[in-house]
Image (cartoon, rainbow, N blue to C red; front, side, top):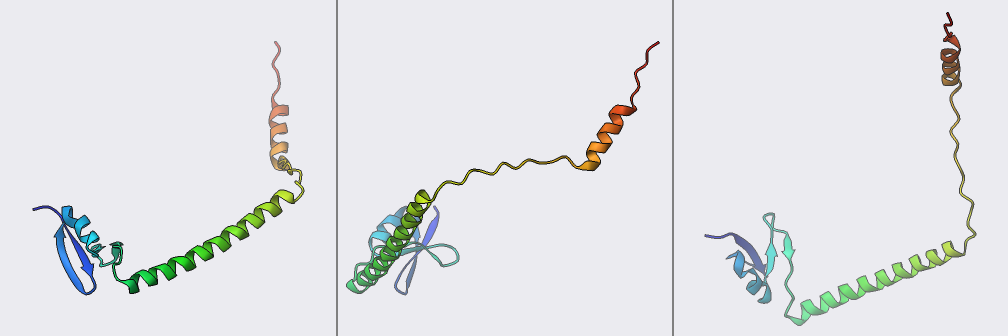
Length: 113
């Protein structure tokens, strides 16, 4: 026997073979995971559900359009802002390291015989 998947439509829960899931989605069933969360949502057939989805998506679209307009305004503001010259960061040697290095180099004596 193959794998099974749990589907739900309203308060009706069914366990169906994995290869039949597409048919149940087309019939209006939602696919659930092991924890009972909706993994794949079916397309609603009743007008109440369709209207609710329409209102929800319309609000999401309006919010996203507003966000796009804000980001575009920020982009234009950044393009119009004069460019600052990049600051070059130069690391200075620590005095302790410099002193140690000079001591090492001066303490070596050349041997000429």
